[in-house]
Structures are given as C-alpha cells and as structure tokens.
Image 1 (cartoon, rainbow, N blue to C red):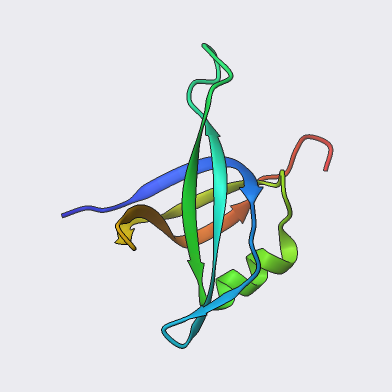
Image 2 (cartoon, rainbow, N blue to C red):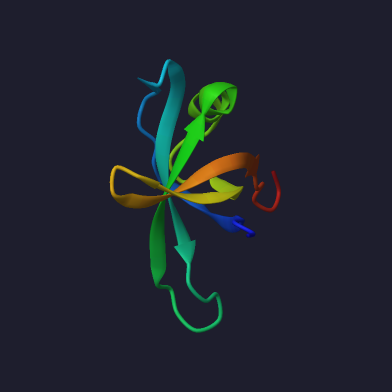
Length: 95
C-alpha cells in the first residue's frame, strides 16, 4: 500500500528537541490553507521529525516559516501524526 503525504504550509509551533527511543525528535505543527481561492481557513497538522533532520529543522526554522513536508501517516500515542521524511524551506518572493 502507498502511504505518502505532501503538504505545504507555515510553522505555527516548533517545540524544542526531545529524546525518544534513544533518538532526537521534534514535533512541529504546520498550518495548511484549505483552499487558496475560496477561503482563508487553515488546518493544523502535527509533523514529527526524527534524527539529524530534527536538529536542522529546530535550528534553521522558526515560527511562520513556510515549509513543504513529504512524509507518511502514522499513529503515535493514539493520534494520527505525519512522520516527515523530507522538509524543505519555501522562500517568499524577494528572498
């Protein structure tokens, strides 16, 4: 079965790194606009980032940063979470 998620949004929560299963991770939350043309409504998704990618994301990104996430769905602690496999910075115009 295919389990792939691709989202683009902005970071609304970026907690500090934590240790789990002997590896570093952070769980950011990103807000994704539902429909760019029809409304300004956003849905917030939890995104878990592991290992070196977590360190880089925690150092490089800040609240409001636009990012693209590629990952997969998983269930962690009875909640659906996106496990990031790739996080990319989306530069705003003029940057």
